[in-house]
Length: 135
Image (tube, rainbow, N blue to C red):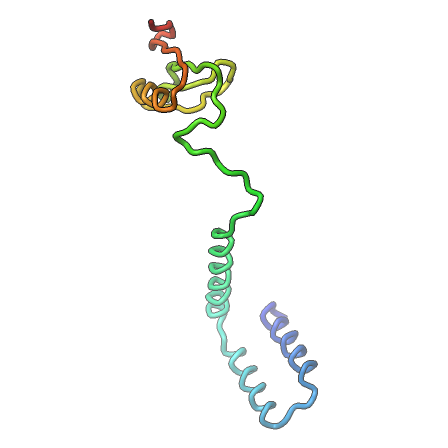
């Protein structure tokens, strides 16, 4: 027995249990519903499932957990370190805190990194491409 037929049978049983007194008029309606269900194709069922799934996905995407941590603004530094270093990175130029192992942010050019440091009033040291300290 297919999944659809089992679901139809279960639903029919539920309807029968909740409506013990069936009149001839109700019986005709039930028979019409059964006939409509038999005429449904798998494609129709999948379309209805997709509608429900899409609505649920959209509702889930819009829902934000109440206790979700707030992300820091990408152009601001929450808790500045005492000093930052602007050094060459494989993907451009990095701003890295003095005691950090990973870059805070990577920029395409050294100028972008310097501008970011100035905008955020960071105390920074600037390095050349070869890794030596600039004065």
